[in-house]
Length: 98
Image 1: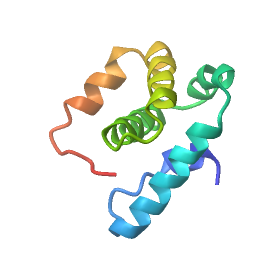
Image 2 (image 1 turned 30 degrees about the vertical axis):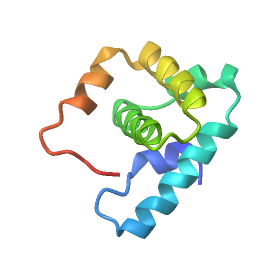
Image 3 (image 1 turned 180 degrees about the horizontal axis):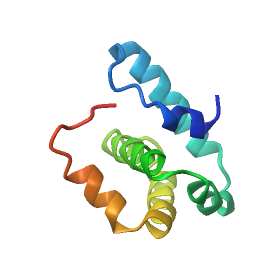
């Protein structure tokens, strides 16, 4: 599956093992993406996918999974999606756990 497919239907209601498997695939995909492709990738995502990506980035940073690369992704996504993406993810009333 491609990154956009994972972000299209995040596993909010899945079993913990399935959530972890998908999380690892998303993080691997982000890690394998060249720095110069990050912004283009973010531009090709819709708002819901951008918000899901931001959730994965924050989860990865929380777990210290390739933090330098994830900080670069955060910068690229913030530049494309704006502060609204950050605010939506951080202020959700019902926290969607990935």
